[in-house]
Length: 430
Image (cartoon, rainbow, N blue to C red; front, top):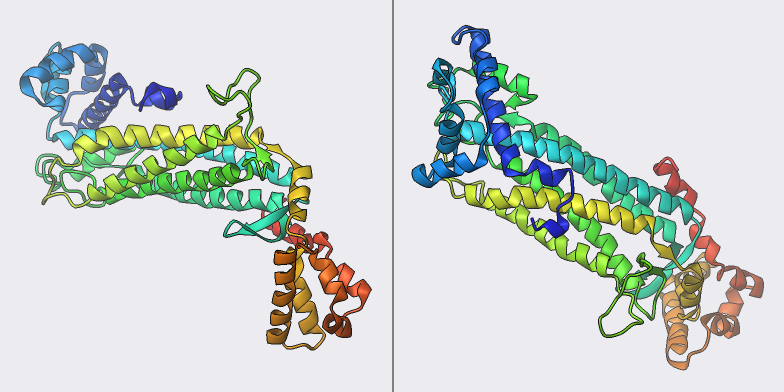
């Protein structure tokens, strides 16, 4: 992840030294398990912990010779140890350490992402409460459909965020697993009891069955959830991008006092944050796809997944966190132009009430087919002649046979479309 989009505390989690510290944490947990079982002298882990030193440059020096990062780590950490060094990495294979430490990192990042998702949900909730009765034109296919509430728009994004929170929370439990089962996962040189004790110390559970690696469908699920989070944010971003168009201008991204929108045109205020979030969502989805490709490894394991995961896991988690923080800022500081919403409402010349007029005729006894054809014909007059639909309806003799003038006028009240809004809000406890 480039520094431009790397935010604390996630960027520190993925620093190289932190990775080696997690590897050491796993090794020490295994040695502590040996002590508990009685196969290592008491205090061995403490002695190693006191003497072990993570020297990234030294690890790099050794790796340049051995061309194996875990071996380089082991040699660098143990070169100053005494007899206790023989218990370091005993019975383990590289992936025991790497995959278990990876789980520690992913669970840690996942918890921060969960917090950021809660912040995003709170921002949506507050905006929805503020605009529960703010009338805005609902659009389908980009065309005026029927009136709705801007608050309901925000609730739709909140509902999606809540589903993603449930997905992430559940996924993190399945992600909190490790494996200390040896070269092909059969515990040939280390026991399941040692694994259980060591993983408990790390706050992890044993994988039900592993090969040399933790099965990658577990990781693919996690990245899939991050992709869903990103796609939910993009859905919000696309909505804002449309509503900020000059000819719409119903909402506007926050624009700082000294901010500039264009190097050439001083008047420009562009939805750059929403556009950035849209682009980032594409990346998140692509990272999920990479991890799907990492599921079918050869036999008990190959390393075709390794190179991709060094990129995908840090980038995807930092990207999801960045997107959530920026989306929260966007929602909290969004300018909502209620006057423009009402102005745009009038542009369809009341055509948006067509369904209500049709249904009123049906309720009065006209067949649905006849009512539909009649209202469609009158709608065409509004479209092509520019006459207000309400006036056309009031003057139509066929409609007058079924509906009184006062009844027709009542059909054109936009508040009718918000009559059940409170029931929807109660589903959210609002």
